[in-house]
Length: 327
Image (cartoon, rainbow, N blue to C red):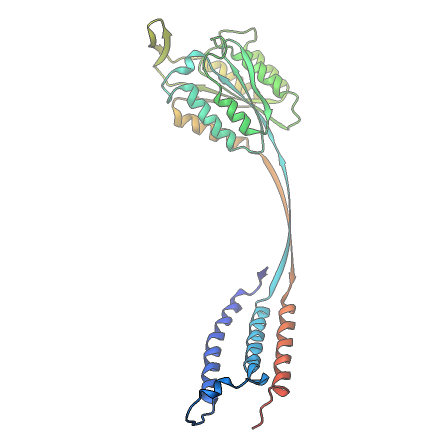
């Protein structure tokens, strides 16, 4: 319940001086009688009139309360809200080749990509999201799903060495296209993250992008890795060794793939830049929501006005019958 004129409720504070005034007047009206002792008077039975002595004041006070509430115009609200959502289907395609273990992003490119992708997934509760991983080959780690808890757990299970090493970007893209092409969603997106050039697989990245374009799928390509040389851990018979390598990949192909499908290409050189890229994609691919609200208010003041009238009538009736005073 809401009030049309809530400022009138401050009038309730007037009851405080009214109560004090009533108590003071009651003390002034008490008759005095000098007696030697009042012990025996305590045993006397009080009449019904004495018990009802304060009832008229209570009734009048309650009537004042209800009148003030009626002046504040209480209103009952009936609200309806209809909401329709248009979900976006997103297939995340993640490179898990050996170069993704480079530590220019912290703790390395692969773990940084997994962490930021998890944040992205949590920010999009209305979307179907799936995961394809690739290196020398490609497979679907998770099909499109709205069960994001399962998806995130599967993301955590992605590690280097799950499949043969290499960089089959075209094969990874083709796998993602195959998983999302039959979707009924009006907006279909692939987020491709890689740090290499295509060197494995029978499908060229451009060919996979053309297939994506024919199905109305946009590709956001992210090239991950800093400029210059980077340390990459390599397992040797002597244990884990670091090898200094140039951080280079085929940016031109990634730019062409994104442009061809109506998407964008981004370069992530550190953790902050990678996080900003996902936030930018999140803004560009917002779920469409249409909301219609209805609000109907019903006046309820008459209930309190009626209650105040009945209380005042009860007070008048008591003062002129049972509690009538004779001068």
